[in-house]
Length: 300
Image 1 (tube, helix red, strand yellow):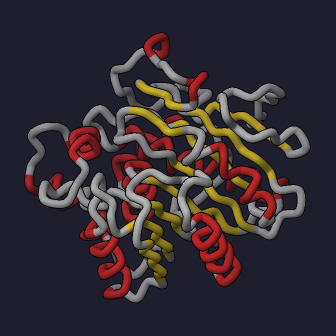
Image 2: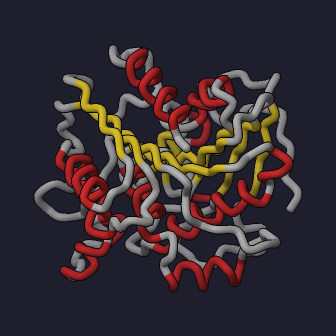
Image 3: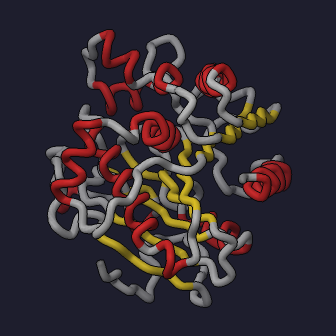
């Protein structure tokens, strides 16, 4: 698969990365395996870094010049209605590359009640990075997500072996080779983990399971209920005063990971609310960046 080289910034506010190797990939050059019913001409907001109505999956990769063997696929948040492509996506590229980490931002498709749509996008993005592992000096591929993107990242970490999604994926993948869809690690910022009414974010819930979900669907996509010993190691970063996505989401995921013997770190900052991403206004940014950097270095 050959990448499309672009030499201009696609999103306002993205950092200048001209000295770095930026590559652009269509996630589904052979056609997507499923459809969310949205039309490309109705996508809006790319010029302001908040894309609504996403229906074409795209992967932007920033290849580290001095690779340490790690890569991260980032899933921006936005309640499964839009994508915060800058402060939860593109803006982190320079920081990750400085750690020696190849960094990929996934513009995933909105689920519109069909979990398989974004799940297939995330799984294929992981495969794309693995298909270029030798070229980019990558040995481990993790997934990162913020808010609803954290739901997608944790869903990918717990549903990577979903038989229906894998069948769709295999029918349309452009990757040649048997590449795993399981992330090697997960980085979750103030994630939506549960679609249970009492603790979920309602927009995310509707996006992934619809307005009248069955009890089975609610349990299945409350991702803490799907954790097992094979779930990848995780770090969770959030604020105690988050009124959009309650901290209980992360706490339940943390407890499930501990119960199953999966290595996990959780950092809860006293203030900050929701959606701080890479913004300098978040007063704990120096702390979380150091804690994440330390955790990544400790990964085996």
